[in-house]
Amino acid sequence: PFAIPLTSQYDNVEVYANDLNPESYRYLESNAKLNKCHRKGKLHTFNMDGRYFLRKLDEEGIKYDHVLMNLPAIAPEFLNVFRGWKGDYDRRPMIHVHCFAAKIGGDEEAVARCGRSLGCQLDLEMDEVYVHEVRNVSP
Image (cartoon, rainbow, N blue to C red; front, top):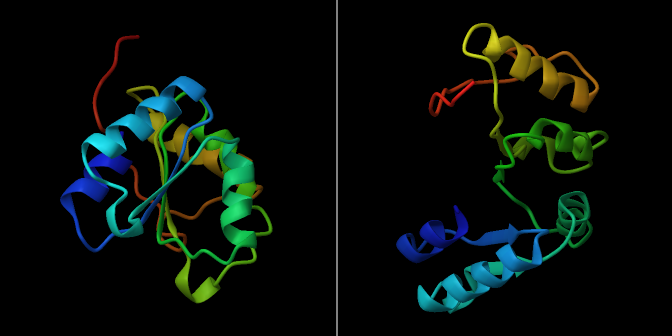
């Protein structure tokens, strides 16, 4: 849901979008064509496992500033792909993790889930961790 608006509305972005679901990928491609997102090589689409996708970008030397992980039920568990990350440590990407959390105490639990997947305890200040509630959902 982010790749199309980013590449159709902004000229200064290049997006590498991935979706494992073949049907979702088909719609991503279709919407990219309708919105002329492929112009000037601004949008690159892939249909593969998320972990392999990020490894592919790293292996090909493609630098990225932001990673959007928008599978709210399981996104924190995918963070383990960054264990042992060998990228440019002076230019670390900001990783946006969308996840479900309880209304009370959910922020701490969400950060703890991310830390467990990364294999470390996250320090909110030192690691620049921000929690933002997008919306309330049904119990």
